[in-house]
Length: 515
Ligand code: KIV
Ligand code: ZN
Image (cartoon, rainbow, N blue to C red; front, side):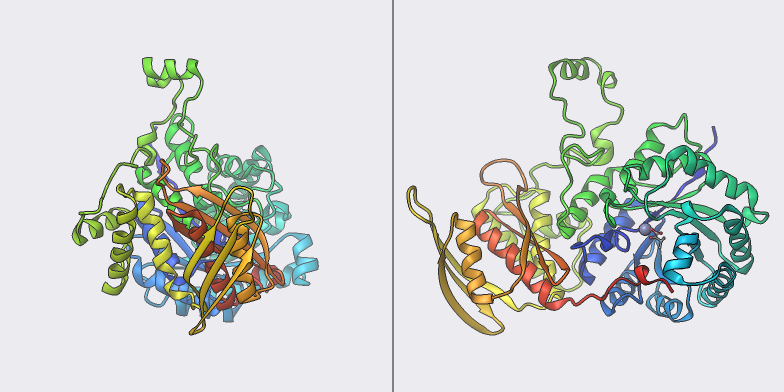
């Protein structure tokens, strides 16, 4: 069967970033974008330029750095949003403006407070305006899966005439189910007279756990672009997972009439990078990228796999980038070797200071831990990369006593806006004592929503990576810290979250407030 291209549109940096606590700094966005480019995604949606100054800078930085993927910014269907997106994309090699407006009766009536005819007119005006800045304009009918068919048909025909080259049909609230959604997409494509002048795309949310199934059903019915995210990150229950869609299409070539340009061996490294930057860990039983996805526990399975791999395995672990966890570097490795390994992981540094700092940290780590794995390097840059988060607090020193039968005590010295302050506190455990001492100094009035520790690699000398989620006045941020000492890692993660809380003031997301 001859295959048609399936365009992979990654929205990890936009819809993925809309998950509470997943907001990324400019340098984090650039790092992930480079990894996505290496992965071979066709379009990178880098953000929502009008949402905040940080979003604008993020889109602009990605647009300036990426050459092999198209770079896209989201914009509501109004002139100001579109101009802001165009400005952020000014230096992109292949820019795309993605403009949207809601088309379902419930969204038009209650959110937009607009009549359908006014929505149609505004959509056409927005697409025409976007075309003044780029030939590559995508139009989304937000909440398409709950929109009326005849209205969708009319608006799509009109925006294609106005110059939209991609029409996206989102299941915004994750309400659809696969047969229904596929049929809706097929019916729209059949029913729009100028459908042959556009690529049809889908964008599915996972509220009922059906985002991937819905996307694949749409592909069978004619969609030729899917919007998805690494690890299925995204608002609420997330978006369709890129790795699952790509591997389904590749594994079931007999069913899907399409192929993607994804370099599948780079899936696991990209997944790890996104998990470590956002602080959203991957569940062990997650398809493709979960730690257990290729582990055969039962004796019968193991026996079968050893005799003939295909008895139980439908994909090869190495095809998606597993088994790359080999020993890479050690105490005697030089700067060039470290730099080369970072590059192999898709990590590059804009300035020689960035590389110097990473190299110093590498040497410190190699003194404590003989074998340095790829995961250690990823965690190490997660520490270095926080350069564009303004630092209000820094750990100067930490001492903890922990003894059977006695309450642990932590002595903490912090650098706070240029001044070093010290205190101590007792706690129910060493981490609790450390956090209480930090709180005495910082008085942050934040609520700890989540605390978790993961071993980055195997062995008791592994670095522990700590994730902390804090909430204050409805705002949620994640902080990460890694160290071979998990109490120090915990302190770093807490301070990282507090620094983000202090530095990045995000506004409410404009998608929620319509036009
Ligand atoms: O879920 C959605 O409808 C969206 C659109 C803006 C594409 O994210
Ligand atoms: Zn979405």
